[in-house]
Image 1 (cartoon, one colour):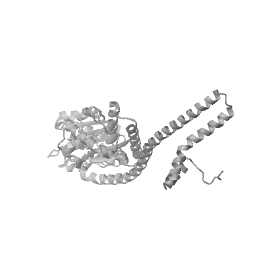
Image 2 (spheres, helix red, strand yellow):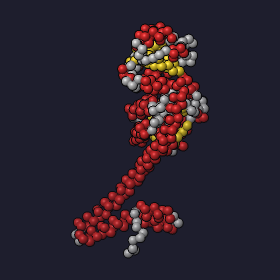
Image 3 (cartoon, helix red, strand yellow):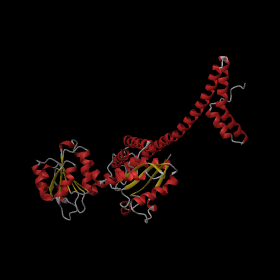
Length: 425
């Protein structure tokens, strides 16, 4: 049995190539059925995200032999028969396939070092493959081992603790000001990817309420629904600003969204309860003069840079420790994989010994039925059983001596636990 991890990601391929090789969620089950119908593939899992498409396979031949076949299947599936994609692909066989999976699950191969979303995506891919029946003993064991390793990395290192994005840094900074998030309200201005990440981080920290404001209210409503929030238009912000303890803004507006006058009125309405504000936008959404107001804590992208740089340094240090954990876990899995071969060998050896035993026992029973003395039958049974069991090993050891293969003799000594210091009889 052999393993192969094949794919592309944000490091090896531009987005125009990645999108050609991506799998829509509804197409994955059929794709799994199709790829496991190929002669070389026994088991398969497909992972497809915006940053990567990967296929994890258990093969019935070597990864080197199967690589071209899997690549051809991938091209055929996406109607890219005449397109050369080999320069964008990576193929990791055996041990490297295991290492790659563990690094991916632990966030070490992500665009944002240490991000946790990829682990959830891997678990979803595993669940789909399991439901589809494209997973057997080997990949099931590998994925369970991968999930366990990723959990250990999260537990034993600070790989995901420090902020490395403006969204994460904004929420981390807010947590330094407000401890009981569940009692506070956040107002998010904009409905793009950054605000979506902010909302996700806020939800994970247990924020009490989320209001999302956007020029297109429908878009704000769609995002608010995902986080059990409330949607408003930009023109409604003055009426709701006083409700917000946390304000984070990221729009593409060329003019400020929040003026000093609007914020001043909100502060008065709040009876000077503090407001934490982060302006992620460039150009800025919040007038710089707002920072002059008492009870307002205003931060910009530049203010977050130091937090992000420190967070990235912390994650890079944690990544070194994570790599050590992964090295150990790769070895553990490969040891288990090799043990499968030994189990099969032991099974065959036992069957061979049991056949010899049955034949000798049958002969002994015939002798007893013919009236032969029981003691002599037992002695003969023991002699025959011993001779037949050791015959083949003795022949091979003798031949190894004649052929000048001392390593095989040493292996026999270890295998049969022979004490060479015992006196000869």
